[in-house]
Length: 186
Image (cartoon, rainbow, N blue to C red; front, side, top):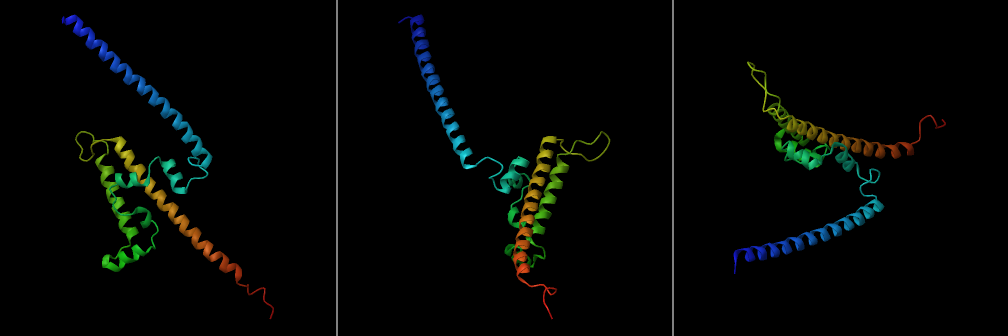
């Protein structure tokens, strides 16, 4: 067999293989596009993805463009941030009873502030020549650190608001059922 004939056969077979692969990839892309439209319409009908039907935590995630887990990873927090936001939980009482003297909430907040301060300073812009201080100068990472702290604090605010609403709701019906002293006749 001659070299030109062999090269032509290799080129022909290679072209067939690549053509079949591209054809199958196009078919798969079409199937994925159709499936994506069906899933999106089903999710829209169920209320998923709309701001009105989502939980407050999901709304915070969309607002801050960061999940609570991502924020915990960025700030290197190992404790349960959402449970710590409740403050008066059983785990906080257990931590205080263990002789630590601080609630879980205080421990998590201190760890967050410590990690935040360290990461913020580390990623600060470099100091001008002749001056000490400064960091590596990654504005992107510094911004992520700030957004992570804001996301965690927003979650705590949400949990505190929910806790206050529950307290008001439990006090509200009890106060309505009690007769006022002014309404009584002597």
